[in-house]
Image: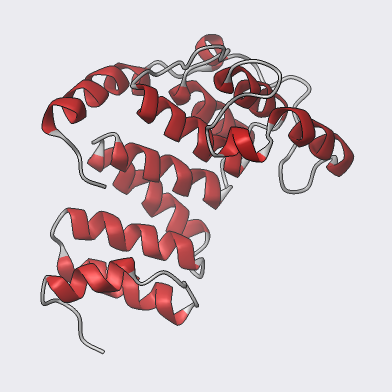
Length: 204
């Protein structure tokens, strides 16, 4: 993603304070919540039918109100809903605000809630790391993606995202290591490999 310097500074300045304002008092207790992976599938289906439609996930428009409101509703019931967390992150970055219109909590709070609910959910850590990287918080992104890979070392998407992070840092050896692992595990997109080739850092 090509970042315009002025916009990057704005996004970072909005996000940085929020990373430290995460606690149960600030972000709410986890009451009447359900696991996205192993929870109530019927309830999940109902919630997604009304509050996480394809238009919401692609950030075109809300279904029962604002995009922030529908995503917030989904995440209040299913804190570790991976796709809703990813969509909320994109909405926050797109709209350059920590708390999109209609949302109950900020983006930092929703990740705080997800991690408190399921601290060993590797995909939550990966999505958080991806968000932090795009927000310019590279050190924190490295920490979260490091936790993710420790939890699921054979996850191709986590390996790929770590490769992208190290490529951004121009740590080509690490980027190549994780890229090769991702492709060995079947990751389908060639973007990371192509970027390493362009940098003259890829060998078959």
